[in-house]
Image (cartoon, rainbow, N blue to C red; front, side):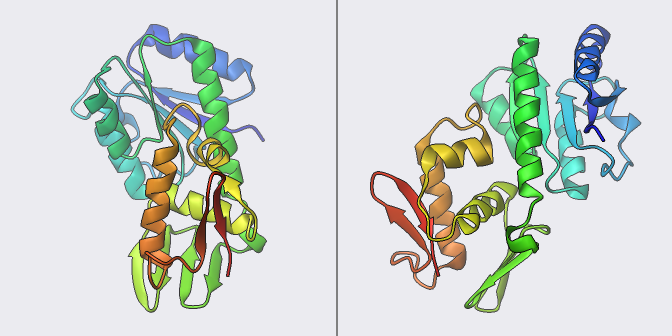
Length: 230
């Protein structure tokens, strides 16, 4: 069964061109012109969303992203927009999008991003040790619900935090380098900075380490990357 994409774009030329190209690659594509068309949907029937920011109607694409995230935490969202300022891109990512592509763009670039996002979604849905919940000592992480627990204290995780933790758990006892983390969790085009990985590691240590300054589980391997061990 092919992946099903939801494409929300009010420019009929772009919608038709991109929709036909994606369909020719075997994807099922449902096209809409306004956020209101799917606002009350539960969104689970789609595997990926492609959403323009400036839409016709009362609600824009950023608001639609937020609505989707209220219903599903892991389905990838790609924003399309002519707004090219760094603040616009940051606002789009904060609204729940996984990637942000500035118009005009090459069709081939959009396709590469779609393929990468679907590949990461497929990987994330394969739970470590065939279980969606992973426990060790005083810690627990629920990859399906994006939540965690440490010493009885419960907290929520972002999708990227959960994906990074999943990657480390899958490679328990092995060093995972920063480039592999960026490619597997974010995709090279979203955050092309190794410093991004370092910052997320610090956040995970605050969640799961008894003493974040002296890590017991999430170790730095100088010049290489990070390793999870129990």
